Image 1 (cartoon, helix red, strand yellow):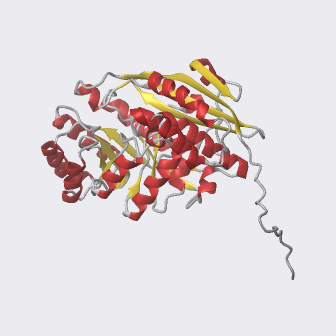
Image 2 (tube, rainbow, N blue to C red):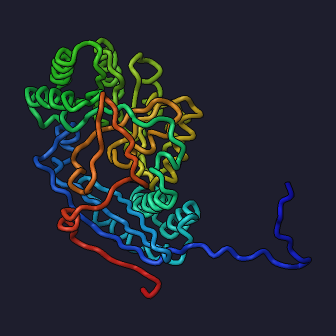
Image 3 (cartoon, rainbow, N blue to C red):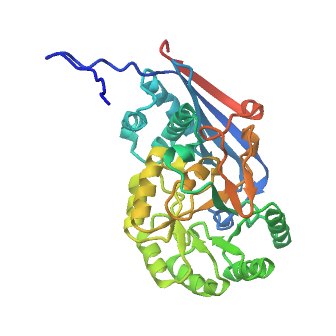
Length: 392
């Protein structure tokens, strides 16, 4: 069978591909109120105040050809207005760009604010745009984001965190556990790290007894132990058959985490507080954890998250993304090794759609993109917004 092909005359240039272009960007700041103040060990040690609301920065991107994408970043306690201000500063850089060139756009936005650094608030402000572009790309393909990335599975094992905070008395925690298990959860995590380690052990023992010997159980110290305390508590906690001990030390103490991970049978998990690929690369290459816990909105979006995934897989680590299950479900579904997903119902009022939990696993939705649209309640909680187009 003969094939026809286009030939060019000598000196004739290739035709210019007329691709779609970003035409409009809307950035907004909204505050999600929590039903009750939340406290973990950082509050009990006096380092932070109870959490009462979460700031969200939303990016809504539209193109000349009518395609749309939605993404978000967030901040607990301070930082939301600062992220929003930086997002507004860099948003005009998207206008006129090809929305398919996501890596190019990420670098452009990063260098726009590079004098303020390439981690922390500056990269977190990029995340809403990057996530919106990936959402758009999957929608254009008519695929859930997980399928666009190359899904390894159609569901991800899922554990609950929101029912195990230290601000909740133990009987309430046990009731929350029963409700979560009835709803189909696959694992339970509770907070530890109190100044009184005996109180921590009492809660852990009670929860393990309540769960039974085999149900998946994790604890999270939220960076509140020093090295000696972490070593002693880690040895004591071995008897409870934990899936992992999370953030036993300061997030940037890679050497301490590496020594602890090497000395304990119980796996160590950390990474949620890091805000760039570079920070995660240092964590991973130093052998500081068994489970790596990146957060796409914190590291700058899906583009750097995929880099972290590749390095973590190369190093043989397991993955348990932090928070934002609406985004991380798709990313975890594309990871080569069986991951965990963190369940928080807090964000449900922000979106019109819901995720489905079944037999301990969260199902990847079959809706294109991330599979979510902003609710009217989100619009009501929005305190500021700004729009940019080619005329701005």
